[in-house]
Length: 237
Image (cartoon, rainbow, N blue to C red; front, side, top):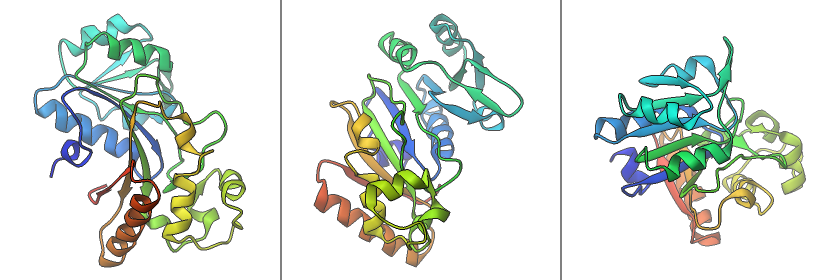
């Protein structure tokens, strides 16, 4: 099954990726898949991204002006839009500019890395996070299943926030229920999701029988607690 099918994407979407567990990998894999299907795809970030990751796109547009991104999309897809950077990190446009680009209909799909997690499989966002554009139609909250069975401090970005949200100790070994408590907390990523956006929890790194069982348990908890949120397993990431 394609990534777009797993995520239930329609003919035109703005997808914001938040949380942990492979956002950049999904950003570029989904972008390449949609571009191969003949779609015009704009990739960007509202936070920071590794410079070497941005190079995965077919083209990089270095500009804060929407017209430059539109011109690039008329030539090639997918286009990675960044505004500044150095040899290590790149930064992207403001959420307002991303909204303008989506409203312009220049792209069929706009895919945004709207959060950072420093490579951790689980993320408890700070007050200013994630940075989700208002026009987002699909929010994907990501989590690596390798967070299960390990201490909270080893698997979570912003450990202090995770402890505050869950009352767990830093050395607590995380269960599927504990992970769901972080993912779906009302003061977590959900508080910044646009009201009209569909919300998906994407569980990644499911490669063995034990991780499959853990992913099934986590999915069942989400389905029971929040039937309006769709759990999806993406084993390839």
